[in-house]
Image 1 (cartoon, one colour):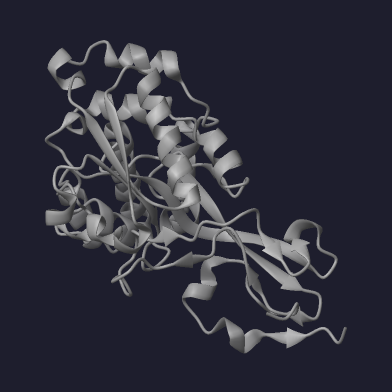
Image 2: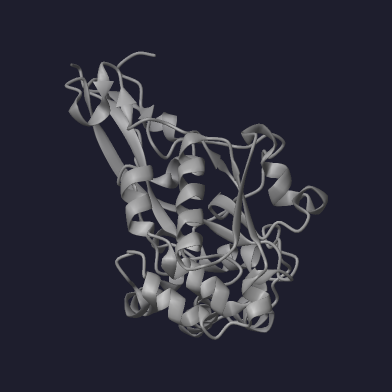
Length: 309
């Protein structure tokens, strides 16, 4: 591949086998630190590494509401016990930062002002809060804590490391936890096929919506009938229907904030995980390749040009 080519980096993606149209549930291609021609892109004299905004979240999906994950305190405790900051730094080489809400900032859209204010009010630095999680679990019935929690991840370097980090968090706060690693080529079956998924409690995903709009994100992941609502969560159905029918943008944005607040309080049906940047290595002889996630939605190659170098 020539040095002038826009070189996709840590956030380059491929769809899992059998999934060529649906948002979310993507499986990242595991990579070493981003490399362009001649070595690591950040130090290559042949070009420069750029990072742009993206509506991408690496997170866990609650798939089984009948197991231990059916308890809100167990969900909240596990989420706060995970060292998201360390995972973003070590596993995703700094391209992942802790996300305070289930939707990430690049998807806030018309509700950006209200969601940003609320996100800032609940934001942490993403460090593991083990003692706080243990206190939260103290009030959970013993029979619930005795249930084994299962997580399935695809067999790739990054996702396996993520899975190990989640398991370590569960072990440290006294939860029974099982990590299953399955071939990446068949992982999408766990996301979309109930028979394959069975009673699996948690699923890994790198999720993005169809468009950078919070109602699209919520409609897919947290509303009855959503294509990425594996647990059948229905807690915001009424608010969502009201928002979709609300013409006034400010009023609609307030409804979105109410929905995100409810999802955050319940830590359901997704965890607040990591938000990712979209990175691209651009050779010195080329211009016009977008670093933002916009490349997914429009013919970006039409804007490519040369620098004359």
